[in-house]
Amino acid sequence: MITITDKAKKHLQKLRQKANLDDTYFLRVAVQGGGCSGLSYKLDFDNELLPNDQVFDNDGIKLVCNLKSYLYLAGTELDYSDGLNGKGFHFANPNATRTCGCGESFAV
Image (cartoon, rainbow, N blue to C red; front, side, top):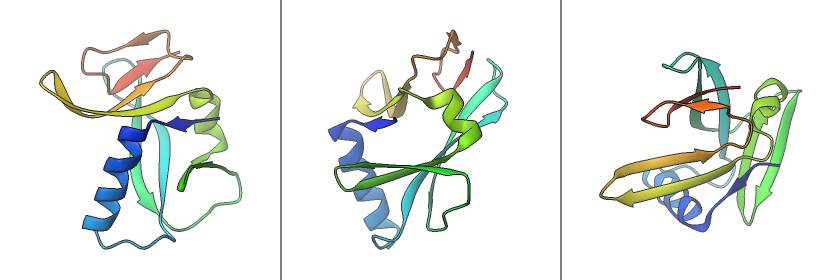
């Protein structure tokens, strides 16, 4: 399962509203090659489910990822920070053996 903190949910709802996206849009999370640690996270709004998608409902926020990405993301928590040390989404991924300083890429 992939979970989302309350702070991240609130920010995602604001982003979806700002982009004029209705409730048919969900958050797609993916892992792709790249970044200084080898793998990087990708977030985007989407409204089309694909055959191998894994779907998670987090109190009204639907999160979707493909099966390949889920193998890297199982147990991950998505959080949002707006503090002085950095603003943006952060992944607490128990599968990552190494992360880069910016937190946007990881290795397993």
